[in-house]
Amino acid sequence: MNIAQLIGQCVNDLPVIAPTAAPRKLVLAYSGGVDSEILAHGLAEFAKLYAQFDCQLVHVHHGLSVNADEWVLHCQAQAEIYQLPCTIARVKVKLAPRTSVEAEARSVRYEALLAQMCTADILMTAHHQDDQLETILLALKRGLGPKGLSAMGKVQSLDNDKWLIRPLLDLSKSDVEAYAKTRDIRHIQDESNFDEKYDRNFLRQSIIPALKQRWSAIAATASRSAELCAMQQSVIDEELAARLPRIQIELGGECVINLADLAQYSKAWQALLLRGHMDFLGFAPPSKVQAEQIIAQLLDAKVDANIEIKLTDVLIKRFKGAGYFLPMAASAHSANIAVSSIDELLEAGVNYGHNKLIQATLAINAGVRFPRPDEEVTIEFSLPGSTRCQPQYRSKGRELKKLWQEFEVPPWTRTNVPLLCYNGKLVCAIGYWNEKAFLCVENETGLNFKC
Image 1 (cartoon, rainbow, N blue to C red):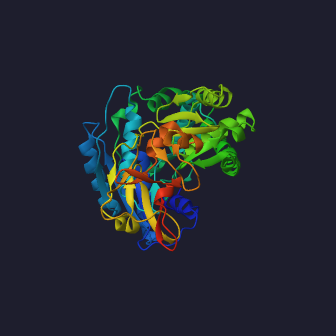
Image 2: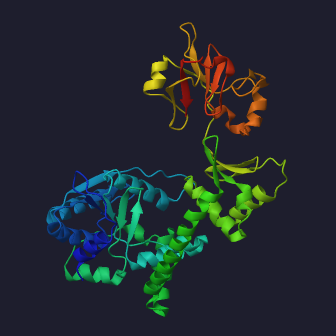
Image 3: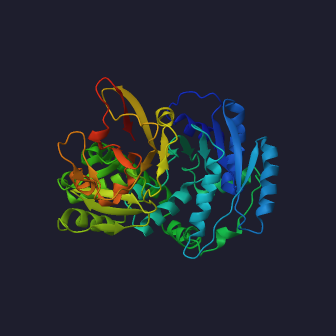
């Protein structure tokens, strides 16, 4: 068994990336346990063969064990033997009721590892075949579908612009331990690995040994099942990528679902499209029951029903035949913005809300007029619904609340629409209309606003 070759095979399987100015970094998540220790041993050999890579060990100090400081000393000593740089990343794990210590530790660990990486860098972890079996069993416990059951891949994208490789994924735990023993590789033993209050340890200590005693090849066969699930999921993902844009529309700067289009699909595809849309927006996927309830309410509730579904990170609403998915933490824009000068809008624009930008451009015979010297320019996010407005294309004025209905702007997003005002008078509902009274005259340069 040649660990350096296994690392090289994973690296060679990565898609070709345009060369970067600095050498691509290969970072090993280095705990000092037997799994990561043999990988560090192999990485030392790999570094000699592939000088174009900047190889680095990163040990994350969680502070959860009384032995954590000793582990740091071990990792630093081993790194000197391997002639590899070793970074010690100290993190704090938040302990709170009903919070998984495992999940929290994993979250801060990956944050610390990613902090050491740049675009196109590679993270390497020491997961092996038995870890894969644990992951599959945990996915079954949680009732996950093909995506969850596909478990871990040898090569995966990470954080949108990086890579994750697992060179040991085809090796069993016994293979790993035999490799360490024959080469007399020193490693640490984390005492928490024997605490069965953690799900993985319970599987590792009490369940998997019994399964292996009955079916010795179960880790290998389960890995094959994971590969088949991953293959099927890739086909689903390809088809989902083709179908999802057919039900998505842009309304008021929001990507929403056209419910009439969603209703044309089978129940199975409705659930997949819902999950795909939520993933596209960055929300956690719903459970099977939650997905069924969301679809039933969005598609089958009475037309005048006030739909409001709350999940952990998303608020789901329905308006005018569209499904809206809103961050639970989103807040209304209540503070007005004073604009120091039009040059500010022309040059850099004004930031507001969630990384949104208002900017002005110049055009002849188009847009609104420049403000006069005595006019104060503000961007506001709330005017009385009774405010009389007259969009440039209308012969008569109308109340603002009626125009919001006419433009089908959902009530909860109206305070997100930036309103350009001169001395408190509406000049432009940015993204919707210009006020007729403030249009530039013929042959005059006007201001066009966009966000």
